[in-house]
Amino acid sequence: EDNANMEDYTGGEFNWDQELQGVILSSFYWGYVITHLPGGILAEKFGGKWTLSLGILSTAFFTLITPWAVGIGGSTALIIIRVLMGLGEGTTFPALSALLASWIPLKERSKLGSLVFGGGQVGTILGNLISGYLLHSFDGWSSVFYFFGGLGVVWFILFTLLCYSDPQSHPFISDKEKDFLQKELGALTRDKTLPPTPWRYILTSVPMIALVCAQIGHDWGFFIMVTDLPKYMSDVLRFSIKDNGLYSSLPYLVMWIVSLSTGVLSDWLISSGKMTITFGRKLFTTIASAGPAFFIVGASYAGCDRALVVALFTIAMGLMGTFYPGMKVNPLDLSPNYAGSLMAVTNGIGAITGIIAPYVVGIMTPNHSLEEWRIVFWISFAVFHVTNLAYVMWASGEVQPWNTPHLMNKSVESGDVNQDTFSEKEAPAAIKASH
Image (cartoon, rainbow, N blue to C red; front, top):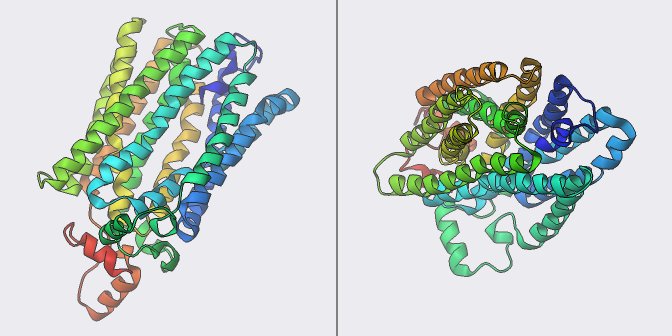
């Protein structure tokens, strides 16, 4: 996301003020929010493979034509292009959730979910490093867009050749693997036989509302870091372009390592009976909220001590990695059948902060001063804690009755069960019963 901030990085081909830069950075999320819900519905109906790959291909195309568009239309064209990029990227997390629901057994959910969702951190790491190198080594910022746009096209080709939406459609999976996944997940054709999405139950579900709150808190802090950490390092700490790419990448490397290691830890603690799924999701989400909140604020009081500031930001982002075995995989717990739609709602609402946060930062930091940035970080502190409190109070790791709406309606009509939740021990049976 920092690639759009061309004035700060290159020293001035475009004379764009802080407020306009904030609009440019946030414009990606205007489109990103819109396609979440359609992406989730399409992924559940037709599978995650094409929903994911075509969305990213469109983003790659718009990335490739960005230099041409900006040359013709300036900042207005860039804003339009970034909105279109967001439209393509909006299907990513819902489609990934649908794929995970079709492939990942319950006992490996935290580990493999963290591996998949944490891949974004690897992209950020490489993006910052490679962008810094390209900007430093080549005359002009356009090389960054050509490189990553071309890389996206190559990814699309490889992904469509290697990936399949579910085990049933995979031509090379062994019978042993297929039997194992069928035992763990239920019938392999469930994506095509689902009843209509039970939106009334989903949108009024207390655990779902808690999940949305946690997503808002995570996205506020994360988008502040993704879109504005390079600006902070350039404006306040005066890092060079090359050093900025290096030090902006370091926090994401630590975040990725933490997400993978705590994903393994979470699965072990749950499968060994040392904690329930519900407690585990709340524990790791709390670590990912409270920890970054304190260290981000602490960094703003470290002055211009570059080493200390980088260390504090790195710790903050590292702790944010525990969001992945926490709330990020929670949609799979609540409803394996409708995980794509749940991710669409939570990630889509959370992404609205991606529209607000860069614009707020642009308005609040017109003079690039440390004092202005400190206020930004205190606001993030408050958002982290308030949203986490809601999650701790109301979140659940249990399969919800609306995961199988046709069975739930029959049970309610007969008076056999209430509309609370299935227990975690009953979850696998409930999932299978829906097929």
